[in-house]
Image 1: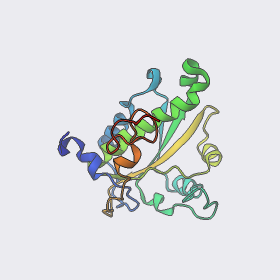
Image 2 (image 1 turned 30 degrees about the horizontal axis):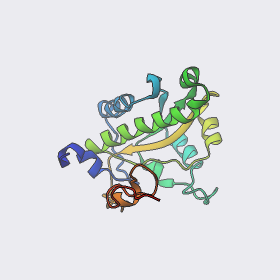
Image 3 (image 1 turned 90 degrees about the horizontal axis):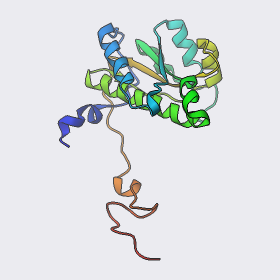
Image 4 (image 1 turned 90 degrees about the vertical axis):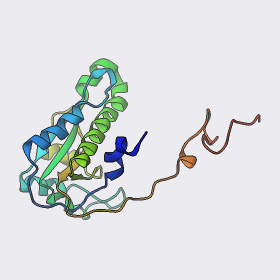
Length: 196
């Protein structure tokens, strides 16, 4: 694989400062359509996208975020409100439950995550910044957005023109996270497993 094939992956960063310029509708449509092209179990396509541009609603959603599991209330991610558009990625479990039963509780969120990555990479390829946000009080977000019973928020995706160029964050090396045939046998450094 040459670098040109993974350019958007290499350029993608978590952007937390945005310029106020709006995102053109045709570019926003491109990002959303990229999400709908993600792989999905049984072609159930459980994703839905709720776009928030109203400053009051953005602020209400921001107030339900937190910066980490142990942060709790009082530490919202205020920077989200600076994005011109906030996409709430929703999972409509009804479609996947009808086909897969209780397994849908695992399958459908993975489908939405695949859609999110398509959207994030399409945004990056087109010069937009974004940042995946999963730290929020789910029940409050459901209430604010008036979500029906089987529709749940999976993540918030602020999108806009970046006002910063964050450096790449370090990643774990493949030798620490890949395994050969069974867990604990390194794929790249360990060679074939030895008899016990």
